[in-house]
Amino acid sequence: MMLNLIIAASFIVLISLSSWRSKSLTLSGAIGAMFVGIFIYSGFSWQGLVLLGCFFGSSSYVSKYKAKLKTNVMYIIEKGDQRDIVQVIANGGIPASLGLLTLLLPSFEDVFLIGFCVSLAAATSDTWASEIGTLSKKDPRMLFTLKTVPRGTSGAVSSLGTSAGLLGAMFISAVSILLFSLSPYFFLYIIFMGFLGNIFDTILGQTIQIKYCCSACQKITEKQVHCRVKGEKLHRYSFLTNDSVNISSIILATLLSILFF
Image 1 (cartoon, one colour):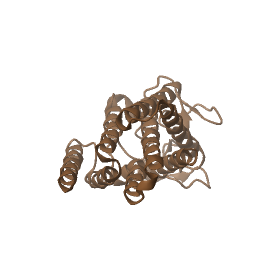
Image 2 (cartoon, helix red, strand yellow):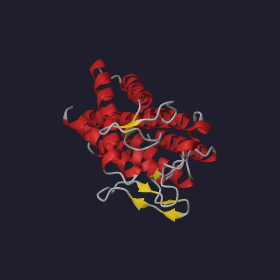
Image 3 (tube, rainbow, N blue to C red):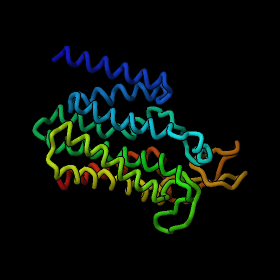
């Protein structure tokens, strides 16, 4: 067992450092990914690492896919496609926590496993929706007001982004069924709960995520400083960053999946 752990830890370190070298992760992001991978392995063995790899690999791919066409949204989003430790924890912190809980409370392994699969389905659904949605030929609309906004705006939806989010949840669900030999019922359950996490992300992104209006160019952005000047906060009661929205939506979807398990 110790040998398996050493092999797994070495594999996790190697992949994390390779991701740093390829600029998919910052150095802090690579360090965070090591801990996330080790915690997930501790609870869900190699199958958990494979599912994590499906999320990370596919998310890195869609982030870099047609990157030149996404440059027009860089003024909006707070961070680029190279993930730091905060982004790693925002997407992988809940799956890692469930891995640790499974190790500590093995009698709840089944329920934690479903929560784990749903948490990665939610993270994948949101990432695919965000990254592929920015390639939409039509500007998206805000979920509640249906107002047309620039691509990349948090809380906005498009048919392309929504379809991509659904496919992301389906992808993780299908792999989960194969890896963990789950019943066909859970295929639909993981899809539904994972995609629900994407919807939560959209709602939180529109309502309480912080956005600023640049004092110089008047563009709406997630960046507090834009055009080298401090922007004006759009909504008085908004307080969540994009990373906070991500982890909050994953928590909500995961808790609901466990509650209705």
